[in-house]
Image (cartoon, rainbow, N blue to C red; front, side, top):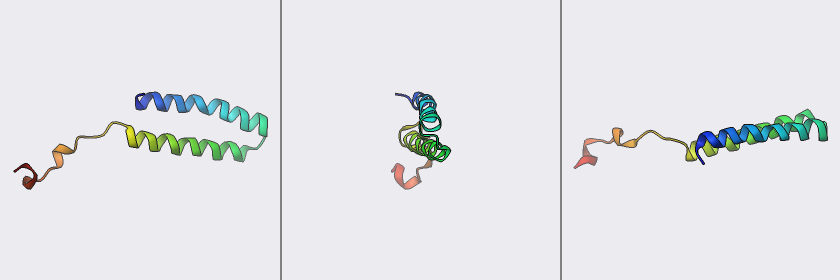
Length: 65
């Protein structure tokens, strides 16, 4: 999966999460905590597997010999 697909999937996952916590459990605190948890997980996966800048531009002269 691409990082954009994962972010879109995470946004789709929030809908049933909110429906369960707000309509089923009835506790807004659980909805907030669950949303933050999903956000942290998606952000960490995006940082770990997302697009990165090339590190070749930051080499010193000693590395090229």
